[in-house]
Image (cartoon, rainbow, N blue to C red; front, side):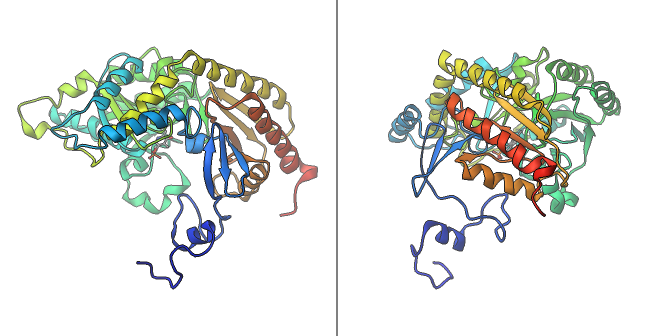
Length: 442
Ligand SMILES: *Cc1c(COP(=O)(O)O)cnc(C)c1O
């Protein structure tokens, strides 16, 4: 029953939405109305009027092979007709077992156990809880997590705590646990970051270091090199501290390898995955770990159990979608697409680097970020962001500027022509909004 007097189903989709729906990361009073999307194909979203939008952000970084992919749909349908769900405590099923085996083949050396859940924040939460209880079960007291200053790890209290100084979390700050911070080892700050890490490790208080490998996503597409991360992981291991790779954004081919951790010479102990896991089809997450971590829980003593589980743990339909997505991801054509996109990005960077409004460009595999000069305060709340967002939508492009940068994390099926439309619009936006003589009145 609704509390308004409007009969159910009255008005347009957008009007009905405005009456009852609360959207994520949206100031509902001032935000533009949401776009009513009724279908999607490949890299394109289609609205009620038949307008199309190129999804350059893979619908919040989840989509890999294009929307409504017939192969994934067919595999999901087959699984739905066979077994839609079963409790995962005391039971198992083929898709969960097969997915564990196939994921481990791609994960860095040493990963040997898979724990299922259903979203990225939860995958991180589980990784943190595993690390804490690993030491607890061994009778060691360690209270602190180490994380990057601009980290983003999710929306739950543990993952918010692990996240760095982001303006979104202000209201909850006094409820978060304290984390030891270190700078991101971007070029020029590598020795500073290594030094800060070692100081925290020497304190003997840390149980784990959590990081987004090579690319920090929501913190501003900040990129750093695999060599320094390998060095940091090796340093943690010398002090007996666990390393948690949050691959929720970087996983499943975005950085050029299946996992960003595959670029490293030193392997993490725990890996968190979600977003691209099902190709963007269904919510599913995995936290994997080494056998050594698992062994700290493996006991006749019931108090050493990992007491964690969700209603939808290892949902068979989600696992089937993930298996279908892996089939597509492992094809040589998909690898060729990722290389093609990376090459297109490189050419665009060469073209745009000299633009007077461009401060810097960054790229890792299929992830592209262009930072622009801006007089306005940077960050999530600046109004330039909203104007840029609208500018791209008018041109049939879904792009979500982040602070003073525009980024792309496209699905691998995006065509060169679609990429070109996005590059040209970025170029036009820099000229239209950002060159001083073209500045719009405030
Ligand atoms: C998006 C994201 C998360 C949170 O995932 P959700 O599925 O949105 O809860 C965690 N870590 C990283 C690196 C992410 O990009």
